Structures are given as structure tokens and as C-alpha cells.
Image 1: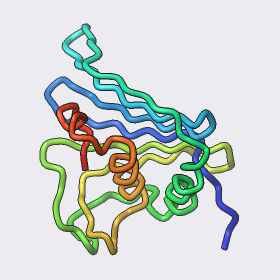
Image 2 (image 1 turned 30 degrees about the vertical axis):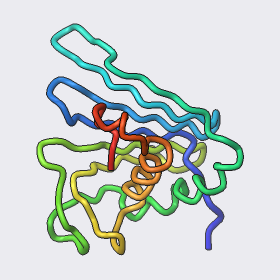
Image 3 (image 1 turned 90 degrees about the vertical axis):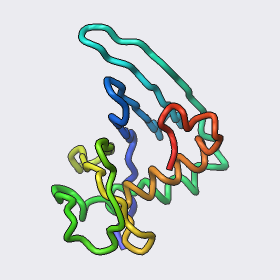
Length: 149
């Protein structure tokens, strides 16, 4: 098995509400996780919600299991479609874009997340997103800002 190459920064950007964009940014180098919801209307921008947390050193080993860039490589340049195994639904009228950057030879990875997969076939970007939501944004107060799984 290849030695892991961990992402240094990961971004999940979603457009789930009209004129709103949510951005979750995981900075593994600085051990920070943040989320910001911005309403954009023409040339005006307004921050509706902003939240950040420091990742504890004790939590890092578990988190890194989801952040090995090599696990994501088979999904580079793949267009999700209803032809894949394990699909049980899709994000209707909204989507998430995953971006991952590592301090290695791997170019930035971008994956569009429009399909829900069952647990047996879940893609690593979806697995990471689900983990972050459940671990750090599990409280119901975050749901009204579009942070849920």
C-alpha cells in the first residue's frame, strides 16, 4: 500500500439556497475547520453565519483517515451519473463541490457531489463531508444554515 498523501486544505462549497453560498473549509495544516454562509445579491454580499473550530490533536488521527488524497484519485474526472452502483438519490436543485489540495505532486482535485450513495459505495469526499457534519456540526442549531447530513 502507498504511503498516505494527506490533503492540506479541503473545501466543500454548496449552493443550497437562492443567492446563498455555504463554504466549509478544512485546513489540516492549521488544524482549523470553518463554515461561512454568504448571501450574494448583485454586487452586495452579506455574511449570514460564520463558525470556526480548532481541531483537537486527539481528534486528528481519526480525521486523517478520511483525508488521504490517494483514496480520492480514482474519482478524478469522473462524472457522477445514475449509472453508478449504490446510488439511492440525488441533491435536488442544489449541489456541493469538493476541492482538495495537497502539498505533493498531485494536482488540485475537484469533485461535484450531486448523488447520494449507499454506505457500501459511498465516495471518499462524501464520507469526509458526512464525518465533518456529524462530528463538528451535529447540533440542530446548524441545520437552519444548511449544515446537515
